[in-house]
Amino acid sequence: MPHRATPPTPTHSRTKPECRVYVGDSRSLLRAVPECVAGKVDLVFADPPFNWSRDYDRERTGKTWDDRSMSDREYLDFTYAWLDGCVDALRAGGSMWVNIPDDWAAEIVVHLKSRGLGMVNWCIWHYRFGQNTTGRFINSKVHALYFTKAGPNTWNPDEILELSDRAAIYGDPRTMNKKDGLAPGMRVPMDVWYGQYWGRIQGNNKERRPNHDNQLPEVYLERVIRSTSNPGDLVLDPFLGSGTTGVVAHALGRRFIGFEFSPANAKSAFTRIGEGMVRTGGVRGMSTAIFPKRRPAPSAVS
Image (cartoon, rainbow, N blue to C red; front, side, top):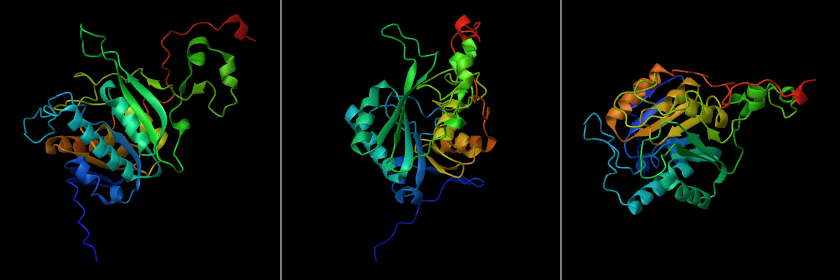
C-alpha cells in the first residue's frame, strides 16, 4: 500500500465559516493541502510577488520572500510552478484570477491557456496614484486575469451591478426599461475597474494595515468573490500577504484557505480576517461615471 503523506497543519484557523492559514511555500502547500490535492477549490485569487525587488520584510523578521536576486528565468519557473498547482487545485468549472503587472501578464495568459483554461476577461484595475516617474509614462494599472476551468462555472452578475452611465449622467428613461434581465438603470461593470474606494491603499486609508508592503482594496476582492463564487464555496489565496482575500471571503460566508511565506504576515492577516471588512457591500449599486449628472437630452424625454 503506498504511503500517504500527513497533511500539513494550519498555522492559524477559525470556523463559521472555516478559515485556514498555512505558513510556507505555496508551491509545496498546493501539493499537500487535501482540498488542493483533490481538486476541490472553487475559486483561486492570486496576487503573487512581482519580482520587483520589494522589501517584504518590514518587521525585519528575516523570514519572508526574497525576490531581489531572481533572474527572469527563475521568476518564470517559480510562476509556472505555482500556476500549475492552482490549476490542479481547481474543481471542474472553477474560476481563477491573477493580479499581475504588465511585466508578466502575457506569459501568464499563454501558460494558463496552454493548461486548458479558458479566458473570460482580461480586466484592468486602474488607480490614480501611480508611483511618480519622469523617464516613462506613469504606471496606473494592474491586470486582473480571469480564467475558468472547463465545467459548470459560477457567475453571479446580480451581485455586482452598478448604476449605468446612461442613468447616472443623462437620466435616460430608456435604461429604465431594459429587457436584458438586469435591474432597471443597472449594468454589469466594465472590464476597467476604478472609482470610489478603488484606489491604492495609502497610509491614511481606513483599510490600511501596518507592516505590509502591498495591499489591495476590499472592493476589488468583493467584486471577484461575489461574482465568481457562492456562499459556502472554497476560496484559495496562495499569496495571502495583508489578508484582503481572506477578509472578504470570510465576511461573505465563503470557506477560505490562505498560504503565506512570512509567519509575521500570516499572523497579521489572520488577525485582520477576524476583524472583518471595513466596507461590506460598499460599492454595490454605485456609479463609476466620470462626468457629473446632466439634464436629459430632449429626444429622451417623452
